[in-house]
Image (cartoon, rainbow, N blue to C red):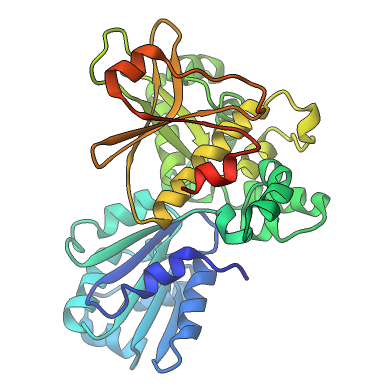
Length: 375
């Protein structure tokens, strides 16, 4: 068991007349945290339902509040896991929260595109939304020393709970491959009724090799023999399934700033490494820069979520070649970050960027990362 910081954030929102909606990829711990919440509510009547079961879907197939209430019974706290499988789930949840406001409902979903589309309008003003990532470093390491000792394992095998708990690296690799082959594409294949999953695999492999670089959907399409629109559609679906995420380019004042570019990163480095079958130690890898950049951005995102802030996030690049790996814009301030794994690698703040935006500038390397990323 890992103590997830989302646990307290979710618990603090219980019994306030809102549906709690938890999004996240499969196997990141949504069911575990729900069961932990159920177990913690010792003075409440609780119930857990898995919407992947036909019996559960059938029970919610009618929007009749009496029949729904008879099915769920006399409960104070109800968890509906994988709620996207329920037809018209938004309407069902609306009926529950409007008709039985004393029942706290928690709904989880592995694919935000499906769950958002189904619950967005019916639950306007009636829900609190949480996104769940793989484990954060701060959830598995209590101090800088323990974090430093685990760094190489995290960069290679990632932070999926079932993978991280393995002490045998061969078992970690097997677990990652099971997640990739059994779960990673499931929602996309079901949602789109896709028959050519090999196209998705090849696209992901290409994206894995381009982490930290600007991505061209036109070039990807040429390599995959797909049109640009299809590539962009698949990338969008992969992002909504919490496999990858995009950084857009930042542009405000300067001429010749890139304005329509994007970079793509992975929500878990173990998944990324599994896709290209590379579990080599860091000392013999030629992609350590990409791994380090992806890792640092991920941990900043998790830290911001823990701190309950939602900055706008970007990268910055000028046609002259000057660039900034990552920046956050929040509360009228800009924080800029350059990620260099080795402390011996020099990083100089781009003059044009500094003069135009006056940001706080940080260089993060393998020696100062713990302190810098979590402040």
